[in-house]
Length: 436
Image 1: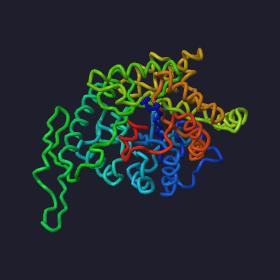
Image 2: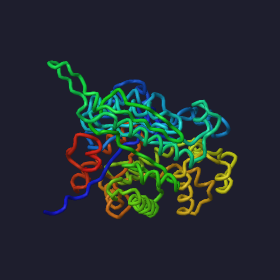
Image 3: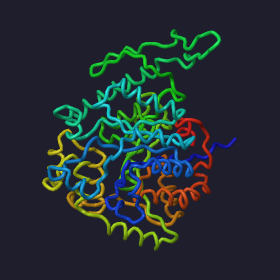
Image 4: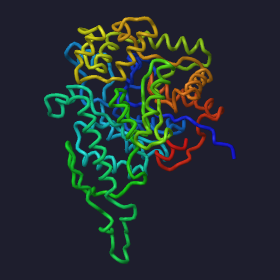
């Protein structure tokens, strides 16, 4: 029997707000601004993604108003940067209610949350969604977030990952407290549950402790799917141990191939096969019925960009005020414990590829895939078949129009080529992620 053709994973990068990476997208006439606080916005989004046969969508999150640029949040807030206007935990049940296969997830920090709260919240979502929850695991990257959670400073990066290892160990112990058949629900005998099949977790680590058990039974997945984006050496090791999907933001194909090979090569250290973790570069597209139409649309979209917001966004991502620090060495020194390594790497990659200074590259918006549905599918297929990706994280330039166009123009082309499912194979997110 011939081997089944390998297929892509697709996961949407979402925000509970109108801006998602592209700094001009919210200004576009097609961008929905009237319904940010309406349940119908998130229900519609969920239906669009499921119709396009995405594995799932997760909400990126920063826990506060980004205030790195010029010492405050005036630029970032005033010009419409990426901000969480509604806690994703409030909208995920709405999206689960109107779908049957789409995976869904929040971003939650292991640095500022306790294992019991994390395990309890995620188990509840996984139960009511029938096993469709993922967790974008972050260790947080700004002093602003630390202060919002009542601590004076952000711990060193390695310490944050050491704590994250313990938090995930503790959460897994809590999720394993209930055996699968512990809930009996036998009216006739009067036996609701079998206490002998519910156990303590009794996790005792250096950073966290928890007794358990949880008060909720085992979910269909057992635990949520772990999604992660660490690009530092320690972050890549963490991904190799825990992540079932890793998203990254490389500038070009060669950068993506190098990241792909590196993370895949680390999995064996933790007894995991290479296909146990999907590597998903992030992309956004501008589509047209012809290439010239797509490029005209992209030019118009770029005309809406305010360069100062690009700089404020990259200040937040790099963990340093780019209006003050502009040279790479100065940026790295000033960032200290703050900043996201993957964002720093992308700026360096842009500078090298385009012959720019670090300061010039930090003022560039993220690159876009521009073309017809077939042309964009060509680019995705090239990365997918040439050791650069197992699929893609798709973020919206204009919300919700880009996801609607992607589903109408790109998805059928990928399906025609046998690169994307036409129907879901599994009931849970983990089943669909591993068997696309």
